[in-house]
Image 1 (cartoon, rainbow, N blue to C red):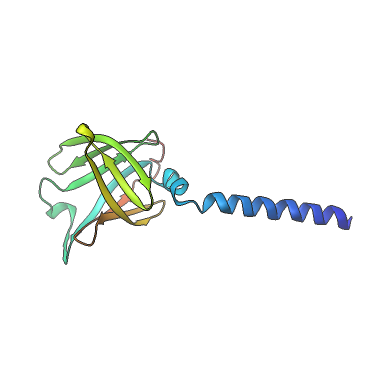
Image 2: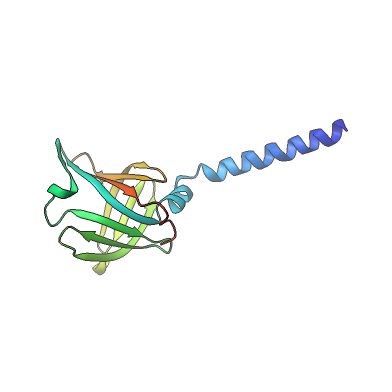
Length: 135
């Protein structure tokens, strides 16, 4: 009986440690957390905070990040831009037509919050719309 308990314990510990190793990989976590519909909460430029209602027409208002690596961004003027996205080394990289890549530093990424920017000069704060993970 003691042998059986030791074997079960060993299997459980191995499974937990193995799952922990996979779960700690930030790029795998990003692939799980990023897909969905994100809406802007605010834009911080230096010491100035702009809320969506106060932003100009170029301010991003939403992003649809798809698991297949595509992204659609809409601004306040309702202009729509599409391209590709990837997450690598704590960088959020958006590719656009003409092979232009824009690289952002990821400051926070949870299942419901996504904060990224270019240094501290331009930082976007987004919230995920619940139930949109597989868009």
